[in-house]
Length: 403
Ligand SMILES: *[C@@H]1O[C@H](CO)[C@@H](O)[C@H](O)[C@H]1NC(C)=O
Ligand SMILES: *[C@@H]1O[C@H](CO)[C@@H](O)[C@H](O)[C@H]1NC(C)=O
Ligand SMILES: *[C@@H]1O[C@H](CO)[C@@H](O)[C@H](O)[C@H]1NC(C)=O
Ligand SMILES: *[C@@H]1O[C@H](CO)[C@@H](O)[C@H](O)[C@H]1NC(C)=O
Image 1: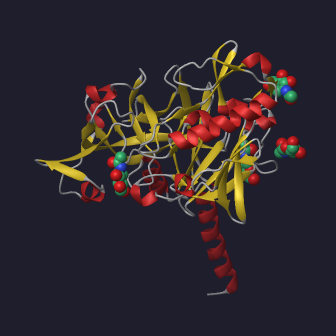
Image 2: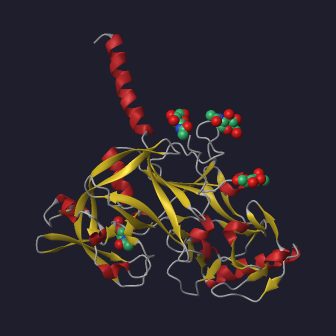
Image 3: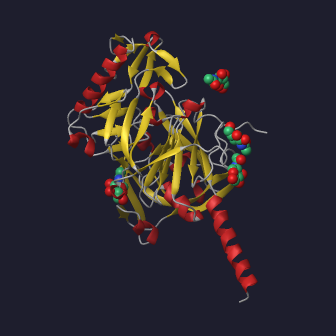
C-alpha cells in the first residue's frame, strides 16, 4: 500500500473516530416543586411523539414506567425469558415466557416495583452543547413496565424512573453503547426552571461559558462503589468557614453517597451535630442571629442578619475535602446550596439529621449540588464537578440565546 493510500485510510478512520467522539446527546431536566424532585422528558415509541416524564435516579438499575402512559403501546416488544437481553440484566426473573425485573422504589414509599421487561425505540436529541439539534433514535431501549401503584409518591405528570446507576443496564450505559460513544453523562440540576442533562458531553454551552475558549472549570475525584450500584465519594475532611471538623475517622471514611432523589443532604447524627455546631459559631461571629427552628431543619437563622451575594446568603462556607490527582481537592458549598429559605425572613441550614443508625452515614442531596455541573465518567471512574455556576452569575437554567 502506498504511503498516500495509507494516509488516506488513516485519516478516514481518524475522521470516523473524531466524529463519534464529538457526538453528544442532550435532554432537559425539570425541577418539580414542592417535592424538589427532578425529571427528564423522553420520547418513547414509534414515529409519533410520545413524551413521558421520568424521575432521575442514580440508584435505579433499569428504567421503569407505567407503560399505559405511552401513546402507542403497540411499539413495545416483550423481552423473553430465554433471551440474552433478559439474562444480561442482573437480578432478572421469569414469569412463564416473559422476563421480569424487581427493584426498590427510589423514594422507598412502596415496597418494590416489579415489571415486565420490554424494548422500544427511544429518541433523544443531539447537541452542540447548547441547543437541541437533530433527534436520533436508540432502536431498542430496554426498560420495564410497572403498574399504576408504582407511581405512588412520585410528582404528578411523572410516569416512571430513569435509571442512572453505574450498572450496565442503566439508561445512560445503553445509550452510550448504542452510539459507541464515551461512557459518561453529566447533570446540571436547576434550582428552578430547566436544567441540562448531557450524555457523552464534550462541550457545555451555558453562557458566559462558551464551550472551547471558555469552558467550565472542572475538579476531579474518584468514584467508589460502582460494583454495588452506588456512587460513593471518599470524604477526607469536612470544613466549615475554613476549619476542619474533628470527626472520628470511621465516620467520614465510609464515604458519601450521591443521590438525585434525596432533596437535602442526610448526615449521621454525630456528623450533623459537629457541622451545625461549628456553623452556628462561625455564623454568630459574622453577626448572623439564630431563630427558632422550622422542621425538618434544626438550625435556622434570621435572613436579614445575613448579607447577600451572587452565591446566595453570605454565610460560612462549607467544604468537603476529597482525593484529587495531586492531594486533596475541595468542593465548596456557598449559601445558595447550604441554606434553604423557609419563610421570608428565615433561612435554615439545609442538612438533615439522619439519626444514629442511618443506612449511609452521608447522602449528598440535590439542594447541595444544584447549579453545579456534575460529570459521571465511567471511562476513568471519576466524578468531575464544577464550582457553583452562580459564581459566574449563571446557573444550570441559563441557556444560550436563540439566534
Ligand atoms: C464548541 O466548539 C466546538 C469545537 O471547538 C464546535 O465544534 C462546536 O460547534 C462548538 N459549540 C458551540 C455551541 O459553539
Ligand atoms: C468566550 O469567552 C471568552 C471570555 O469571556 C472570550 O474571551 C471569548 O472571545 C469568547 N469566545 C467566543 C467564541 O465567544
Ligand atoms: C443494582 O445492581 C447492583 C449490581 O450491579 C446491585 O448490587 C444493586 O443491589 C442493584 N440495585 C438495586 C437498587 O436494585
Ligand atoms: C447578573 O446577571 C443579571 C442578569 O442576568 C444582571 O442583572 C446582574 O447585574 C448581574 N450581576 C453581576 C454582579 O454581574
